[in-house]
Image 1 (tube, rainbow, N blue to C red):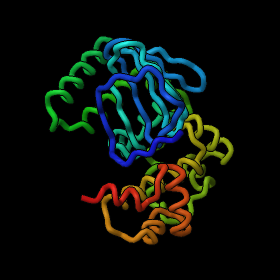
Image 2: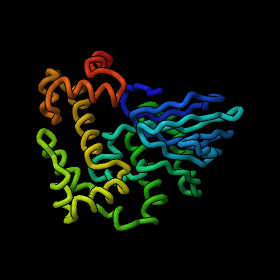
Image 3: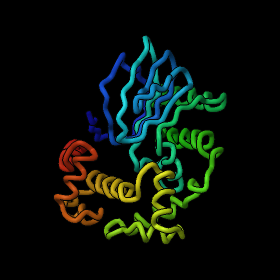
Image 4: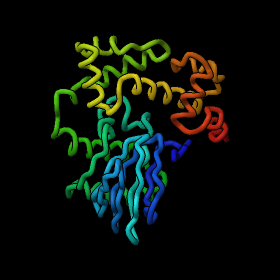
Amino acid sequence: MTIALTSTNVIRRAPLEEISQAHSHPFHQIVIGLAGEAEIIIDGCPLHISPFHGCTIPGDREHCYRGIGDNSQLLLDLFDDAPGLSGIYRHHFQLFSHPLHFELDSAARAYIAFMVEEITYQPEVDRDLLITTLLSILSHRLLDRQATPQSRLDLAMLDHYIDQHLAHGIRVEDLAGLAHLSSAHFTELFRIRTGLPPYQYILRKRLNAARKLLLDTRLPLIDIAERSGFANQSALSHAFRRHFGHAPGALRQTAAP
C-alpha cells in the first residue's frame, strides 16, 4: 500500500493506532515518542518507541506501526526538497539512508519539549526552522560521531552539479570524475552515503524539481518535463505517478486555490 500525499513538510503530534497495514509513502518520516509506547516495524524488525526514543523511516520504505494503549508521538514528514535536507543541509539526508533507532539525550529532550510547545501554542511558528534544527541535532548525535570515508563525499558539490545539469543527461561517469573516483567505487560509496544508487538519486531530484514547478508555476507539462530532464511528457507522468502515487495534473488541481 502506497500513501499519496500532496502537502508540504509537516510536523504534528498524534497517537499511533493500535495496528496499521503495511504501507509506504514518498516522504521521509521521523517518529519520536512523547508518551506511552508504540512499535514501528521495518523489514520485519520491530523498533520500540517510548518517550524520547525514536526512529527515522526512509521514503518509499514499507513499514507498519502498532500503538500500545494511550500514546502520543511527534511525527515529521519530510520530502527530499525540505529546506532541512537541501543546500548546506544536504548532509542531513544521510539520516534517511537507512532506518535509525535512537534515544535522545537531555539536551535533545529539552529541544523536543520546546518544539511541542511551539507547534501547540504558536501556530505561526517557522516550522521549517524547527525541523532543520532538529535534523542538525540528530545529525550531530547519530552521524558526525560515526564519520567514515564514504560520509565525506562532497554531496553539496554533487548536488550543485546535478541541479545545474538537470535538464540534460547526467552520467555516473561525470559524477565519479568530480569525486576523483572510478565509477564502480563512486557508485558503492554513493549508495552507502545516500541509501540510493546514483541513477535513482538523480531521478528523485528530477521528480522533486518537476513537483516544485507544478506547484510554483503554470508551465505546461511538456515544458516541465523538458526542464526537469525527462525525455517527454509521458515519461514524466509515468515516473511521477509511480513515485508519488498520483498524476502530475492531480497535484496541480489539489494545490489550486
